[in-house]
Image (tube, rainbow, N blue to C red; front, side):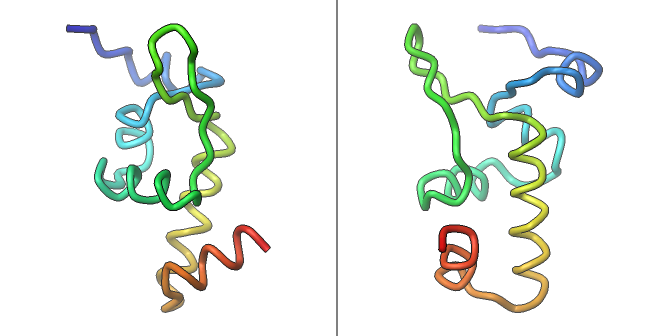
Length: 85
């Protein structure tokens, strides 16, 4: 079992895990996983252990964009079209 990194470490890291994104954004794990599977939240795959790594700043901005669009009443297909024209 791995040890959790501190929030200070996470906030200064270039890459974070999906669990760390949950802590940073207060968005549920299942929601972030869904966004990832739908191609709305890009990630990089670490070869050695197949861990998905998300660019912290880019991912947080993307999640905020999705939240804003959801708040405006946009559906997931509409959001996907906006994010991936």
